[in-house]
Image (cartoon, rainbow, N blue to C red; front, top):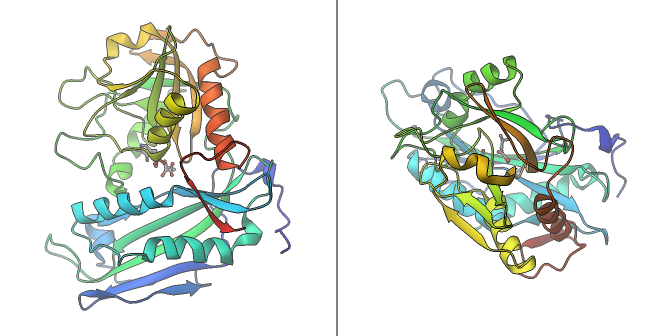
Amino acid sequence: MEKKNIDWSSLGFGYVKTDKRFVANYKDGKWDKGGLTEDADIVMSECAGVLQYAQTVFEGLKAYTTEDGRIVVFRPDLNDARIHDSALRLEIPALPEGMFIDAVEQVVKANAAWVPPFGSGASLYLRPFIFGISPVIGVKPAQEYQFRLFATPVGPYFKGGVKPLTIKISDFDRAAPCGTGHIKAGLNYAMSLHAIVTAHNEGFDENMYLDAATHTKVEETGGANFLFVTKDGKVVTPKSSTILPSITRRSLMIVAKEYLGLEVEEREVYREELEDFAECGLCGTAAVISPVGKVVDHGKEICFPAGMTSMGPVTQKLYDTLTGIQMGRIEDKFGWTKTIIG
Ligand code: PLP
Ligand code: COI
């Protein structure tokens, strides 16, 4: 199969329309079987549930070309489980068993020419989402839904590749206790837009959100979880019921313990502790692991000893091991990669 003529290594994190996407519809209380289409546009009522009350949930995962030329996806079963949880929380009907993984397989196969080659630093990002498509004017769930999964080739989420980021502690809250912070709902991102534009206008790359109840504990950014490394090499990640359970973060904690033999800790992380850490990184499907060089807390600068020029040594090892597993360079001990084309 001939690859598309793209300068893969210069791709950023943007939308490029690819050849085929999967679409299924929910009507009269059931999902149809769905299938691939070339139509990237959606026609819907001006009063659709997604437009009026933001009834939409989504996922993000990537397809990679491995060193030996296979095309794989990483832990799609966890995205399937998470979109199930997200959907139920927003009163969206769950997908039929098997539909999510089937859609991933069909879309990756149909867009194989768009999967960036091994070594290019790029990947094919998959964006599954389910949204209320029928008219809703009183506040209630829609009667009809659409599930779509499209693919777009992407490069690094943050411009400048692995240059350590500068982030600010935000004055805005991301997620309320007992709210929707733990699911992947569009509404969580809509409400973060003003905060991220504010941060960018002030010269920061990202926000660090604190817990809304006490503003004393570290939560996450708008699109990634945090990982910290203590001065004695322990990997620490914030435990909170109001952050998204990142698949990358959960995988990295296992990589740290089982591949690298490091001590790991998932616990509450207080703002006051930030100065004690040696390294800090953002982790997620889009972010992979992006190092943080500096956190600014209302004018007070907290600089991590790893500095502003490169990744810290533990972060680098975590990055190399995770991407090594994803690209088939390091043994996949836990069967995390699923071969789509082999
Ligand atoms: N936190 C938020 C708010 C996110 O949007 C994402 C992205 O999916 C993550 C964390 C990272 O999650 P994952 O590693 O599953 O992509
Ligand atoms: C992902 O990492 O897949 C996300 O959905 C994060 C988003 C901010 C791009």
